[in-house]
Image (cartoon, rainbow, N blue to C red; front, side, top):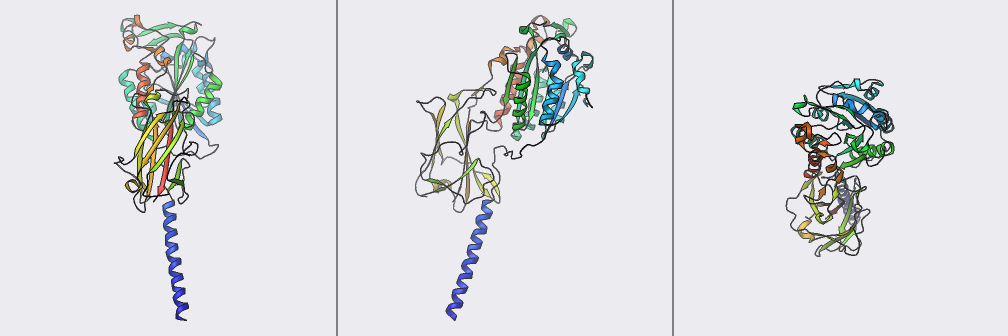
Length: 432
């Protein structure tokens, strides 16, 4: 009888211990989302709030006065259709103040008389914009360096630091009218008439800001309606430098050593793949083959500048805590000589130097351009005019935009200094 009781007690203790073990496994399995990366957008067929802020300054009148080949004239209706197709759209006019428009009032942007404002405070628009919405600013981007510096700082803080994107769509359009704040000797304005000569058309722009998927969707819809010809340009500033950023679900890592796919943890983000280690006394080697496919809408990438950036985090109290010392992990990135735009990334480490006992470790590698690895497309320089032209009407060219290179460079630099714009993301998690 005592033997039976003893066996029963032992069985109960075993079950309790096992229960505690499984509870611990389950709690470890409830992983937080990835740090340093945008949250995955899992909502299907979501309704997007689109807010269009239209520059109503007098310098914009000239876009409405020539009827032939006029994309700007059709823009109010096109943007309304695009906004409705994405969800819900609201229009605003801005100058000294930002005013919401009711009903069909936005169609007044087709008429020159509707442009009565004297200043273009884009910084106010960025300040008011709802970061959860898609915000579109229609303007000629006639801003001083000082004004744009303030705008760029706001965009960096509001969008890039929150893993969101910005696109600039430039459209050359017929123009006949006054452009203000040009040449003090001319009374602060310059009359410009492009006629129907496409080489003389004046650019206007749409500055598109918001969640990356929404920005990309808007750009795609604009391409369908406005086109992609020589007079329409698209430039996307994003941490996604390819059309679809590859990860370990699509990257070949079959030549890796001493690791296997595991499933102990509950992984909420499918970009993160769980691995186990076969032999904790042997070197772990992860080898991946990355096929880089250039994406036309982003800055041009100097592939010679590509490099891996690695981040290591430990799970502590349900949160990822970054490790400051990653010297125990060795990485390399080399382009395959027998295949264009294919790169081999290697990562090696000793498990006992990187993986603490009874811990969960996240290793994130971002394949990024170096500091000077992103270059603006040629059209930005071609459409650019030096700042001096704003002071000397004799140097002013209405077919170009003052400080465009400076404006675009500030967006490029802002998009790369905080997050990790990448051509591939390699995220692996290991429970030791």
